[in-house]
Length: 66
Image (tube, rainbow, N blue to C red; front, side, top):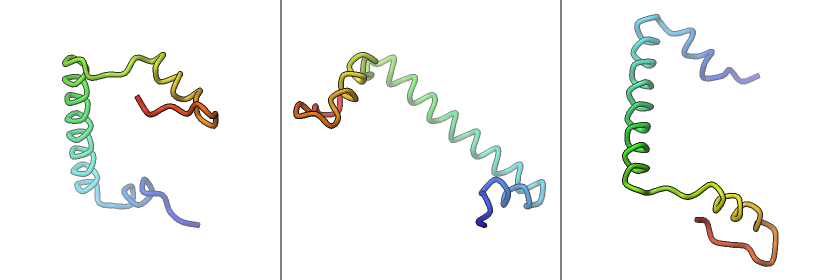
């Protein structure tokens, strides 16, 4: 059975685990900040529009992604 990435990281020295966690946190924070700025700039799709698009899957009226 293949080992999970989490198992592999857990077997690393504690210092290496901490560096990986710090970098992961940094990337997540960067992505979150970028997403919030994008939303503030008005770059988002209304939830109802997304549901309409999903509902169109597999029909003759398949819509383009919003």
